Amino acid sequence: MKKIFNLAVIFAALTAAFAFASCDDNEDDVIDDFENGKVDPVSELQVVAGKKYQAYQEGNAAFTFVVESTAGHYADKSQVVVFQIENAEGKKDVEFTLSDAGSSYLMRNADGSYEAVGKTIADANADKVVMVLACANSKADYTITSGTINTTLAANGAKETKFAEKK
Image 1 (tube, one colour):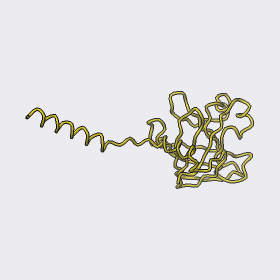
Image 2 (tube, helix red, strand yellow; image 1 turned 120 degrees about the vertical axis):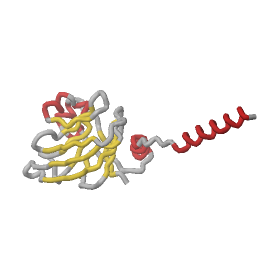
Image 3 (cartoon, rainbow, N blue to C red; image 1 turned 180 degrees about the vertical axis):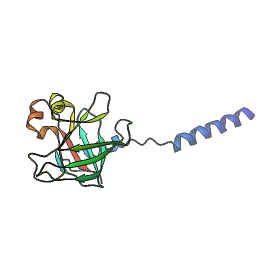
């Protein structure tokens, strides 16, 4: 009888542990939002400091990003957008800066990490570019686009990225 009681206590403890364990996987939430029509995805999006957005590219991990700050203007090519990626394949709290003055492309590496890169690297790795800070052809400040919007990247095999504000 004592063995049955001990087994019952162990079983109850394990059950409670599994019941209260949480897997915070926002990647699935992002994909579900896009697939279930909860968002209106676009290939070009004007971002605002303090807001959260989602990005999804077929064949790559979806991710959520929070815009921390914006500065400058597209007209004089002085834009700067600072944002943080959340839940990118287990990598959390990764901060990036896209700017007209340097790295205005976000590239996803083979290991799932992200990297802000300049035009030369982006053109050579167009299929890995997931986000572009629009400047020359922009009509508004802080416009984030898919690589497919950029003529050179599109010609070099860029994949379409869809964006939406996270509600």
